[in-house]
Length: 500
Length: 134
Image (cartoon, rainbow over all chains, first blue to last red; front, side, top):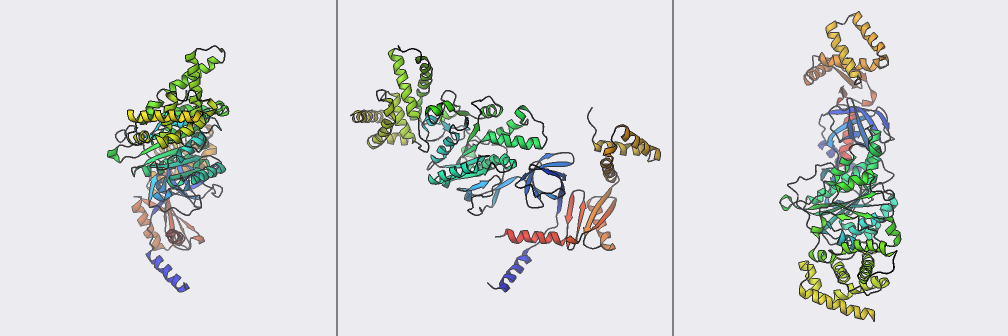
């Protein structure tokens, strides 16, 4: 290309260029500290309106006072000086959205950080939006298959539900979330993983794992790392749900994971204290409940008339030494439709996923379970609860009657069956077969140390031999008498070959 | 008792001056009041606000005009006319500044509103335009 050509095309471009004379609202930075700027002027600014600093950084106006505005700065605040100009943009904080965002890692304001180039997008979505109203909603009736036996059977999750994952550090909270994403392959679900205040190394690991499992094709990761400003951690979950809403508006089902909301609350506390809002309990500001309730209310299942689609939210909250009565855990427990409670004790006993079946509940999910699963899982929760009680009791005495002994043996096997390795999701049909065998007593005479082996063998064997049963589960979601007979026979056959 | 903001005090002084008249006695009373309430350290800010209140009430608009070289009388006249219309003001006071960095054109600032007609601003906009369309 010759220089002449370049000059010509530049000239053409410049000819097309016209500026409009515009009155701009401009303020001046009065003080900057810790990611916060106090700005004078900007008289007509709206709450959570974006502002542009002279050096290109953006911020959001949070505190509107008599003659100053408190702004949180996204990014590097060290280059912003006192006296710098600040322009109001007239736009409420928004992020670019498009279908191309799938498979990408973006930061809290929607800018890609995975080094795979820019994301082309013609549309933007505001990150704060009022949750869908009552009229547009529909009750939860379709299930989210997590592939984790203990969850799918005892604490089932429905599409549009908000289920809290709560537990101490190192109890496998993220593992449950990642497993759930991995299991959504081919289930017509878009996943959004929001990482708030996590180590970048951990996020990289999760991303690599999702990539390996082919899950990045339907997943978006929103990241606000531990090294980034609190302002980014504060907006990250809202950005995530804005992306989720973009897909829901196309009638798609979306699963969003907030990992984790305790760090989000801490980031918001930091911002609030710096903006000199009065502290309340545990120094959190008064509106920390609203912070999470408005976020989680945006999870919903829309009725067909309003375009369908759903957002299922799995918020994660970390507790300190199992204390669920702290401020943030109680808040989020009361907002969500149930919780999956993970315990350190169980984890070190080798019961993984370390779900405490007694304390975990799902308030709406059971109506989303398929009929077959409901049938086999119905008695399981009760069995396990009775087992826990008897187990403590049986430690003292050795003379137990036969019924109690039977119950203990059944309970031990149930615990064994519900154990599962990480990254090994189990299909719903397979879960039904295993639990059928367990609850109908087919496993009662299998030695406990051989339960896993038995389970794996049975699943393989029955898939090959109980064709009618599997077909019925897949199509009608329930077995008929014919299918049940077939399965019973297959299990008995397998047992004879297994014990030999 | 709710604390008094500097704006409240300035407002009070303005209202008092309207009824009492701006005599020497009045101003010494104001100073005495500020002294008694230990507000003298805040006097510069109070005066600044008082200035704004008086301007506002009396329909006077102060416009800061920055340009590379001095504006000629005709331009100033037109500018005053246009600003008076825009802000429905009785009087426009031009506060002129010279700034080499603006390259050309001029910039008018009224309160926190800015009308930027400088070459520097246009070049910046052109840069944005040329780099955004990739």
